[in-house]
Image 1 (tube, rainbow, N blue to C red):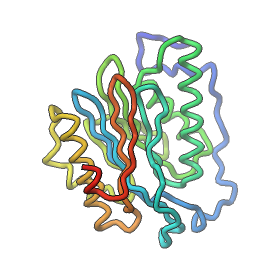
Image 2 (image 1 turned 135 degrees about the horizontal axis):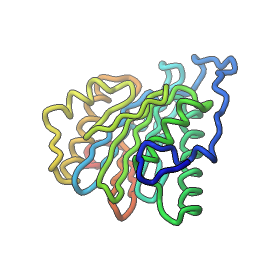
Image 3 (image 1 turned 180 degrees about the horizontal axis):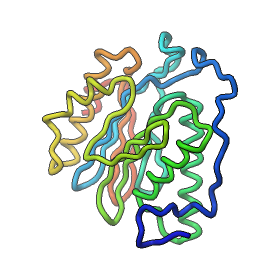
Image 4 (image 1 turned 90 degrees about the horizontal axis):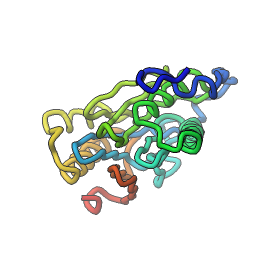
Length: 230
């Protein structure tokens, strides 16, 4: 049973069952993947999420140069697409539907902690293939950034990076991130991190998508190059 005083309780336990987790013989070489670099930064004023725009086939062929890898899933939260495109898209649709259903039933939005916990539960028990998203959002308790691993692990941090460009992007952010930085400063740092990853990671590139999340909502913009995003 849901206990509003216990943040670790699964609010959806009576409503969401377990889903089968079998790969069904999928050929990983022919799965369209985002490759990707996704970055989430939290500040006192809100959250910045930045991603590249490239999708690849088998890690060798650029199949799309205009992928939007961050989607709004909640009035004040967004999530990135990382891993197989189909699995990530299905994951986002399912999580958005449950967040909307919660708001209709409870007449209030889901907390970001509960949203990230639900994402972890879905990743662990659902048929979602090779995903590793970032969940970022703002609620009454402040700004939050979570990473969700393919096994359902959920970790909160001031900033996080996922995808094939993780090492380069993390190296760019490390030492420059300040939890007291402004949203504009966080935005510029996130752009630099994605740009740096695109210079070395073949799975990342073709511009940047930026999501700015505050207590007023989510604003998402796409740019074909890094200079115009700044």
